[in-house]
Image (cartoon, rainbow, N blue to C red):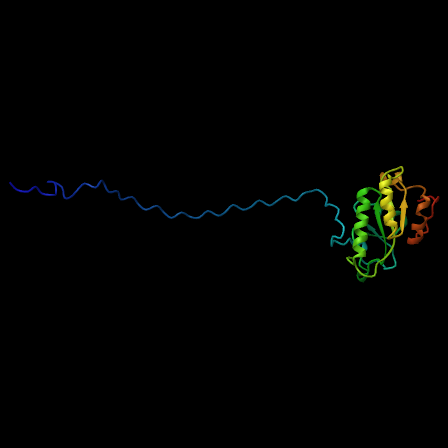
Length: 208
């Protein structure tokens, strides 16, 4: 009796399953990345620049050096109202640069609130430490009342410290400035400021 064959009869080999001749998948075309949507610009007004920021207001350029420059120690100090009544140049929240043709004689303005007095102290510190342009002549520090009535003792003490390093001129509460108006009569405390700016406006005079 013979040895059986390793290959089953009737077949040419072991069954390995059906073979499929599927066509190869075409290469994928890379899709372009989605474009980022442009951001919408906010319609809110720009914030008031902080003390010492490099942005220079146009109002300070091209003015004569002999004009008085009003420097705001912080936003809302009252510079715009003072310039409207007494004249001069609104320099902004920085010390001007006389070498650029900006005012050499300056007045530093701040409110009598705790934050206002702190901002005034910081501005004076920058001037004292040499972190300000050369050739600045500080005429006075003007402190505009932040509210009617007397100041607390703690704030009066801080003002006393400021008087030890600079000439301080206080401006009383003026209701017309709060509503954006012009006072009909200037208080007598503005006499010295009128002399500094050469505006010729004196207290107890009607302002047109």
